[in-house]
Image 1 (cartoon, rainbow, N blue to C red):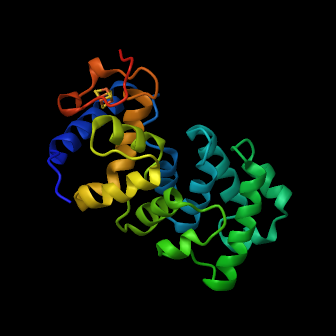
Image 2 (cartoon, protein in one colour):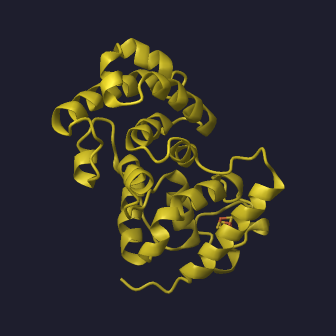
Image 3 (cartoon, rainbow, N blue to C red):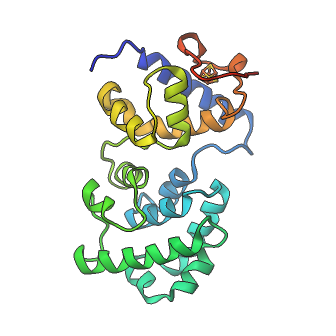
Length: 228
Ligand code: SF4
């Protein structure tokens, strides 16, 4: 599928904007928490898998602290398998759905030990077969832990891609599949980090800051009824 979108110019504008954000305001969220955890734990696959699972429906600052707490006690699947599920849940608290996540992490640790010699598999289908792991999580693990191509589509990426008019889709999964067709591979990996920040700060869900937007020239503002 051919695309008329000038991806290079959109990418350059977003990177430029992020640099400004980082130098303007040290207290603002600079990177999504999973990216921060990935760097903190030197792109360790287990740490990234755990933090990505904890990050679902959870604020970035909570994810970061819960990940550090949990990974201090369970730096690998063997240590996590030895913990009681209520202990894992306490360490994960107050991440959203912390009890469900704790139960899933216990099951994942057991599967990794039984089937993958305690390693996280670098394979989309194997990751998707783990309890509680969806496409967003699997893509993030492949990108951050294994430096493999992937497109991590969350609510921010889904919203901005549709508003901008890059595509028209109903679900993040559909957005990911279309982006895989139209977006040059060199932009896949960094897309999530750029658009999550943009979505949190400018292209907000309700009343986006279109007057300050650096990529508004080509934006079709699909579905945007109010903006600032
Ligand atoms: S112009 Fe508005 S809707 Fe379009 S990307 Fe920018 S902030 Fe979002």
